[in-house]
Length: 387
Image (cartoon, rainbow, N blue to C red; front, side, top):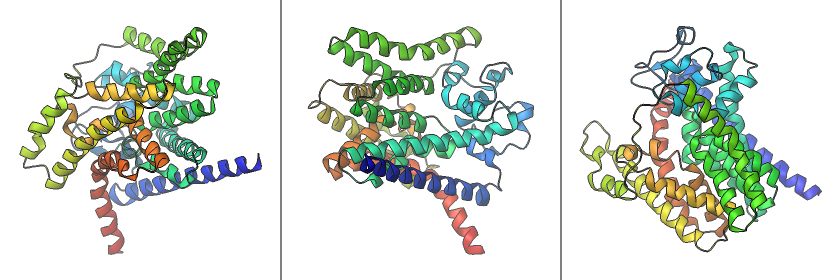
């Protein structure tokens, strides 16, 4: 018992180290690159209008910005009373993703002037949980808890703490899902599956995997129980369908696999003189890494039992197969995020199996995505050397 507590303590220290490193990077970036204005982390674009009460003092980036700006609006208006949905590009799609914005609102006790800071804190909490659960899972398999730091470089995690997105929190919940399925703590698995479905719509794959596993083993009572974990999410989706206008066209689907090969064949960024050569090459390698991850997952899954985690990974592979329109595959920052649980699983399996070469596939996606950090890093180094 003492040894078990000791190992958990070490895993907690690894999680604290991850948060310290990420928060320190974010604080330094905000200070030296953005003049100390923390609203920059939401990547709020100049092309989108904002509610006047939120626009004052907000750091605007050129262009359309990124998705975090919409989740910030949901955090300030989780019950739709302020009608902030009219400032969102695809209201039903964005506002389905309730968990992190609602957690920020609750942490801030509903106080508007605290919500942005609470949102950043929630992102850090999920970073800590994902690292902790990953470390504990690897310790169970006889590996060093320091390998839990791999969670920090999963594509969805990198994107989330850079732009306050939801893919990192979903991947963190998947890390807990893997751990507690392995420990057979099914009450905790139920809660994590319910939370995953409320985080992003692809999180419904977690309850679906549990139901499929129960049906395979003819555990009908368990199937009903785990199906109930998706009820809060679908109730919320239905509520939004009544309250909000329909989304505009969101083109992410394509003929399975064909979209990937079409993207490899044409790869439009190679024809764009405004895109730097390094970005073109790394995005191309990232797409190859995505394909390699899918192939590797299928190869490993065929030898595993029909249990919730392998089923869930298989569902993420299927998701990757259909989310392959050429426009969606334009850059790693886009296609590397929604299926990040698949990448985390491959990293953990690679460490567990000591198949180190398998890390290259997901890390190629992470490297391409991490180029977004290059310009701020240069600015920071230049500022420090200037002193």
